[in-house]
Length: 183
Image 1 (cartoon, rainbow, N blue to C red):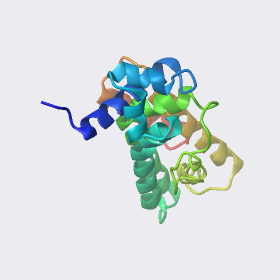
Image 2 (spheres, one colour):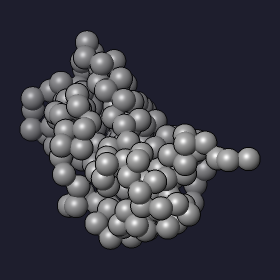
Image 3 (cartoon, helix red, strand yellow):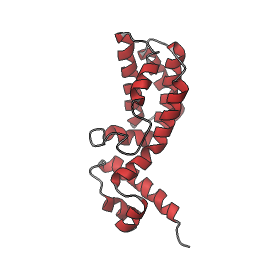
Image 4 (cartoon, rainbow, N blue to C red):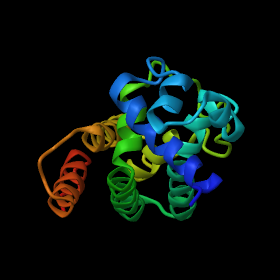
């Protein structure tokens, strides 16, 4: 039985994610991905025009989740904004751990998210920090917000030996302590 075109596309994405994490975005070629999957480079190029298109496709679900969180946070402020932002961002980092690791490990290699075709996410990091800081303009709160978001991102990219629920509880509690909002 012949494999479907969608099946090949899914296998290409899975291979690319694994190889990008192992060898870096720049250290992985289209030929590497095609060879890993067992198809020709031409078959890969039928599905994706270039490596950036593959990366964008891998990060698209993360962008959608982040945009949904951004929308949920829009009308919130104070403690409600902070707690909702922290729990939402922790959930995203845990749901997309491999993609977060890819982003973390390749920050200097990647172009901007909008250049990769991920529209609507520009400025989302600043808005997330704003929400995590409870919309406060105080330097102490803004710095704590940046530290909390950065810590959640780094922790999500780390290979820690904890089950997901333990990790989630520890990440939320740690971020809220950083913000001075003990759980």
